[in-house]
Length: 347
Length: 285
Image 1: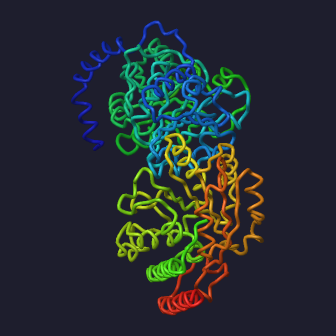
Image 2: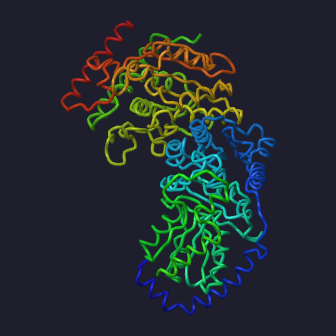
């Protein structure tokens, strides 16, 4: 998109946009739940969704690497023992096997801890799944600080960065239970390798049951005109919390839930940046090569605006509980509020 | 026991040498991994002419036997054999090393019929082949999956993950053939990273095994025709071969793992290969 034209267009259409905003706000009331205190266990939801998928598609197979008990697979393997493959602690073999199965007509769903599902077999993911563009779903469990007590080997904060560099790879990071319920079927229909980033921490419900998770499409979960906050996964509810706090400070923040990190909804980002002129990204991931970088790649080429990246700096996280780590890296609603406020005031 | 007639052995000899000559002609277009292509060619010739259930006119026939060339750099042996079998026109071979060729230095299943899976990075083929074998069992198909590995490649950890897994699952529709030519890029396999004794290793992992001379057509055929060696177990064939077999001045020399002939050397190499072919046919009477 031509930057000048976009700016001009934005100025000319400001009134129209404001009217449009009012309409969207009305729509949002139908989209987001008002009593925002429901928490969902992603693994339980995925277990049911995987079972449904198995019932609906007889070519879905489930692969675990000594990871089935904690990775949503129990119901599936009980219902379809012949379609469950336990490949043990041998991840390169497991991903290669998935490729062999996929090219033979099956749709493998693989679930394991993030580092073992992605880092150990990285070359198999690249060569055997992505280059061949096979329909394989990788569920990366216990993402971000989910198991931060286990230390840096298990606390992986960079995998979106390495995976999004792979051609044909798609990445979905659901924001709440409503999206977790739909994500497997959405991924199955992508017909390309898909990585689903799953947190172990109970997810605060954001969307109403009617919400549809649309692959490659962002969701504006709160309209605003002063600053845009683009968040993904666990950080969407915390960013919403921050946005409501910012309202009290007289700042109208727009919050975009970016559940599909790759391919990115470029149009939604450019549109919001065109409206607010300031963009903050929030992610439970390194600020190197994650959502922030992806959003910046879009904006710097299409509509350059000042940005702030909220996430984890370039370091291995210390050991602690989930909330301790979230607090340590200033990812609580309150600390996101103050970071956004500081950024807003600095401009 | 399946036996080949003398005429069949002669025909296989002629076919494998025709492929060697075609590889040399492809090398008019540049460098190639000639060593492993020549060492594996007799086995691949027997596979496609006598063992595999396949249909060149219907490469995706769902009941076909699968051949996965895990050591993808040996692909010129496969390309020339597939062309000979009629999977595609021989002219495709003469696009080697040209822009966007269908016969690149590592095989690509998207551009060439008969390639089951793209390989190149070592240690990938056996897990993939095993995934195919699992689907065969799951879908109650009778197809077999043959995977060819190199002995240098056998240093990859992923190979042994897959070897352990195949016997765990009792995949008797999976057959490994190790093209054991004893050489790799930088020298003798025994010196770079000794993968010996391979047969004992496979046995220890629960496979049924045989060691053969990978240039003796009768032995290759008899062995490949008798898989699985035991029901409920995967089969491993350690095929002792000679790197660059058939090109006398290059035989058993690691320098010819990968080679770029000068154009003037190609004709000489073609003559040498023709000589080797004649000698072998003479021995057969």
